Image 1 (tube, one colour):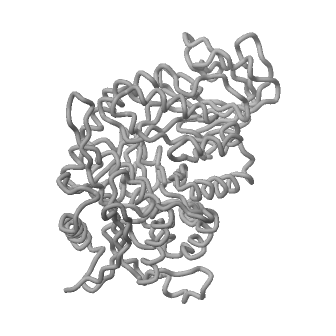
Image 2 (image 1 turned 60 degrees about the vertical axis):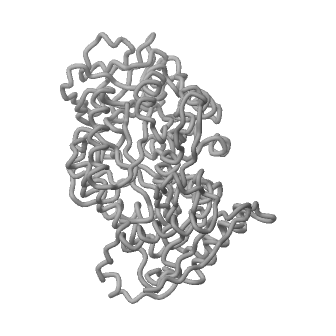
Image 3 (image 1 turned 180 degrees about the horizontal axis):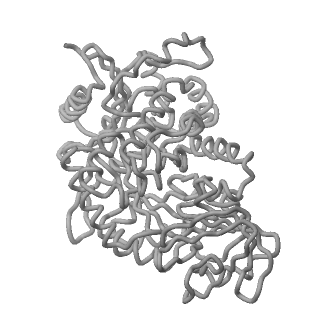
Length: 527
């Protein structure tokens, strides 16, 4: 195994835990998705986020308008150029989200045992007695004894920023609730979540469609985060919508599992989606607390075996206001990595948190430490067993490349690819060394103009654990003569050397196509 790889099952000298970690060009193999917002929209802050490990920038359309998000994105582009760090763009839809509207943006104090009315009449002001909501059908879905949660950027667990309501009675379109804990709600918009109740709202709202077809098309988004995915049909409808929007036919759809309905249909959703986001904020409300870990472990395992990225959310909520995470949060991040997740998604922590850069840095360091004790051997055997025999041609090549890299203690695996599929399959087996994915652009035409593919494929690997893309010169085809392959390989090796991943006398495993054959070869570098 890799020289710095440890196993928790083997004895570790406790003193070695205190040894400082070695600096690396890649902060961690596990990726970090950062949500950009009021506290993280300047070029300076975004540049620092990229340098400390953010590889996907998430734009959450639950707040802010298209113009403010566009200004942030322009700053992101500037930061990418100055730092020379690739970053993908994720658009997060509002979806079937119920919201309390506080037009005056004044703080609302709610006291335990008092009553408050939820009303669809948005003409009313939000007060301690009345909370106007954006969904007229709530009264039809609720009955006495049902539970409702209200808060900003759902739900930190801090009882001062979110409130638990119990339905007392339904009066026409209004729902009268008893307040179960005292809280102060601040801001213009609060999320409302009815526990284990089916809400009849479309997964892709008209507002979402408008944003995707304007802002999304203009910016050629890499990922669509489909909020409140409840059925496989939700993903199919979103894909059908994207397919009619030119370049967005290449956009990957990540299904966000946020409630029991999505959990129930998880297997069919996973089959249709390109990846899964485990939205533990909402889901943590829908599920009993003792079941949350079980869902996470089961869902991540299913994603791993399907070779699709699993993204875990709500890990360091306390860092929204504090410089250090709690002990439980630090352990939670590490456990997500040990479970096999591909990426950690930071929401309020970077959107409106006081320490966006420090949060990304801290999470990256915890991920890197957890990766050292990830049981790759056990994971590899389990994945091979799950895939079964006979393997597909590509699956066989990918698993062989990883096995060879582990046996010769290679410092890196280099994979030539045009679609990104081969590199993702190698990463599926979770090698302990980075996988440099050399994406070879392809020339394509829509009969009106010529263009190169490759940029989407490169950026979309930025959410896959252990995969680091490099866009090759389009003059080098993916399947070609020895001479062109050798020149592309030299570029990849030079990149690895410059980033400190490859040193003299290291061994490197290369996976590429030569003619019709797929080849895995081992190279030993000279001085």
